[in-house]
Length: 165
Image 1 (cartoon, rainbow, N blue to C red):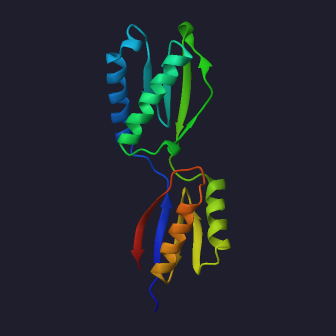
Image 2 (image 1 turned 30 degrees about the vertical axis):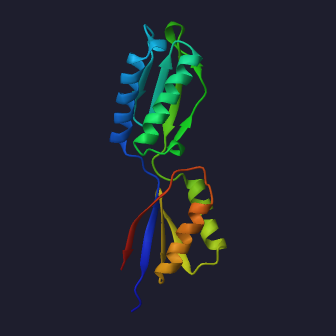
Image 3 (image 1 turned 120 degrees about the vertical axis):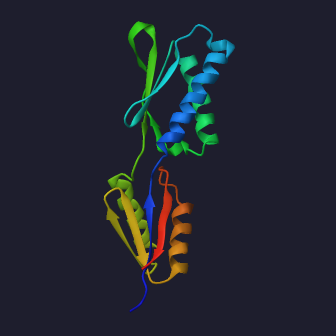
């Protein structure tokens, strides 16, 4: 029987790293002169970040600080999708950023279509919020990974569980 090689394409973000980046952001915000006396805050809810500040300028500055901390901690910015800035209670503004966990169904279909169009001798299947790619030749799988890295799907992708069955 021929051996079968496979890997999974996933999109996951380490929640602990996000919490650490938020803590570092809040520490820096409390120390900065331009935020003295303001009520700027970043909160982590189930699957989203909520940024709130007194005005849009402070919100934008705080968001820049947060993004710097996330990048330093290895959290890709593609994993966040920002909503519109909306007014909040007490004359403040708020912005929500969805944290992407898992590959959305339409993006998974695009990934599978690209793999099939590449004419590589592999099989791609959608399994929940991951895509599994399997084939006989490891070199072919590595070519598929290179093809996927070359195309931007607008999401954060990791290639995990590279194994031989």
